[in-house]
Amino acid sequence: MFKGKAFIVFGPRQSGKTTFVEQLLAKVNKRTLYLNGDDADVRESLAKPNATQIAQLLGDYEILFIDEAQRITNIGLFIKIIVDRFKQVQVIATGSSAFELSGKINEPLTGRKYEMMLLPFSYAELVKETDFITEERSLAKRLIYGSYPEVINQPDHAEEHLKLLTDSYLYKDLFALEEVKKPLLFEKIVKALALQVGSEVNFSELAQLVKADQKTVDKYIDLLEKAFVIFVLPAFSGNVLNEIKKNKKVYFYDTGVINAITRNFNTLNNRNDVGALWENYMISERKKYLQQNQIEAELFFWRTTQQQEIDYIEKRADQLLAVEFKWNERAKDKIPVTFTKAYPNAETLILSQTDRGSFLNG
Image (cartoon, rainbow, N blue to C red; front, top):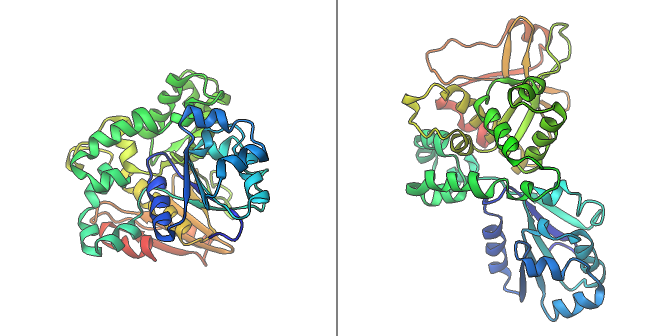
């Protein structure tokens, strides 16, 4: 299937990794051994892998599917032995968060794996599944409930699912790590970030807010990134002396997760953070689009000390794209002249609710 290499599917908990692999396996119809890293007996039996044990385990199976593989201590070595010595067996593994951040597979599987990242459904995927008009009409639902598979497939239970996701599943692998010694502090940091979406975040000030040292805050934010919960945009600086350079913005991969963390599922007419949700939605969906289309790009925001700002900067090689996201159709937003003078070759866009399609779907 994958030319003698393991196939690794990354992504947050509950993002549909298992279902994706099961659909893939249904098409090939080969004898498959299924193991789940969440099962204690599986973790124990695979903790010290050796070729003899693996041969007995594999038998005449053609595919080995390991779900939640990050829970298994020596998973990288285990997969390496199979790829090197049992070439008739295709290994497929899924992993959330700790799978990558614990470094269990990167070194042992160098040159021996294909990787895929599976995030909550993207705008492009939802348009393909339904149609353009239906998805355009669903914008309010996306801003409030996001696009996790369970939310899309069972919309009447969206709020319930998101609360369960954030309370029980999303950080499960992180809390199992030795690095997370203060889960209550961890959750305070997550909530503080959810309340600051769309605003610049100073990690030193955040540490003071949650009464923690900055090193711990930095570490927990890094873990959240590697768990596919958040991503961080740095400030863009190049030709203008008064551009800010140090601050960052934090966004969530899914707007429904933001609202579950803050426990705010109010309609858009009854909340004061719609602009921030809209900005988060557009940037996270653009990030999915780039990833799904294998487009290499660096993502930033831009601001000067005079408070001139641009929501989103995308840099591909020497090309710059600057975008302002406008929720209020009547607002007269424009790209700052300081930016266009400093970067005359940059493409600039101001996007409202009605013209998001081409930006999120090519």
